[in-house]
Length: 342
Ligand SMILES: Nc1nc2c(ncn2[C@@H]2O[C@H](COP(=O)(O)OP(=O)(O)O)[C@@H](O)[C@H]2O)c(=O)[nH]1
Ligand SMILES: [Mg+2]
Image (cartoon, rainbow, N blue to C red):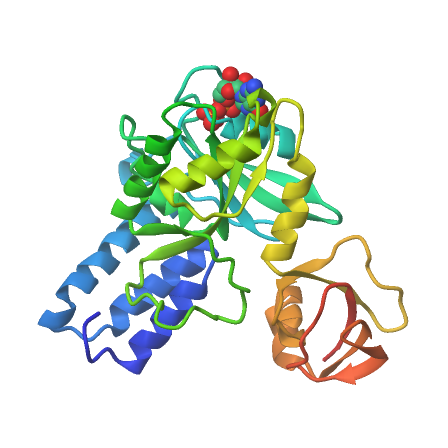
């Protein structure tokens, strides 16, 4: 990374990195371009930022003059629910079958490769929340998908769907890694607690566009395997991949019930229920946060004006005694009921 980047630029870059909403990301990219010191040493980075602005604004701003819009379905999926999870993997591993089964979508499933052409969002219920699963085209050397890395930018994590009964599965996962590496996307077995910004010491990536996605491997088609656990061990041995894994089957449903709880736990999701003074809490629709987030973050999810004018909150639940008055920095925990006072 070039030296002598200004504090303004660094702040814009930090905001870009933590932004999930595509529009907000575009705003922050423009801010990065506006604040970056303009000299030789930043030429490369400036070009990179410009390229990303062009890509994202073309995607978001839709029809251009002359009606020559990129037609077809959206390639950037606005995150919804507790987290956005991308389904990735080689052709025919069962990504769309899992998507259909987990979200009730009508994702196209076919016994031949490259059936899925566009991102397909769907919501997977888990208790009283949803995870957004995005079905994606296969990643393989024969079939490059130019926009795939752009779509992954809004994801919180990946489900890497593999068929370990496929004789070429070792080459397949290597091809997935290679294709992603070219786009500066790395899959990681580390599911760091989000919201704390914690990263393994020395691992902090200086490339603002490097994307690391925590990954859970789904060893699909477990119904067709004689000994899935042994296959998984052999696969790990041969590839060196260390992703946590679940053996599943889109056909029989085996293991599918474990995915939601696994994601909930490892993404450190925290559900908070809000209530108005003197009223019972709204138990239907929790706000979802991550471990380490605070009352102020809850207020911001309700409305930015509420966050601004917040004086104190009262909390019922594990993070405080019943009705305790707390400040905006109070950390919330799963199941808390919060009454915001502005
Ligand atoms: N036996 C078995 N077949 C499956 C399973 N999941 C998917 N398939 C089959 O694998 C083929 C590819 O499935 P699809 O979902 O289109 O894979 P994608 O290319 O990764 O989206 C189809 O013929 C599916 O019926 C599974 O769990 N077990
Ligand atoms: Mg598919």
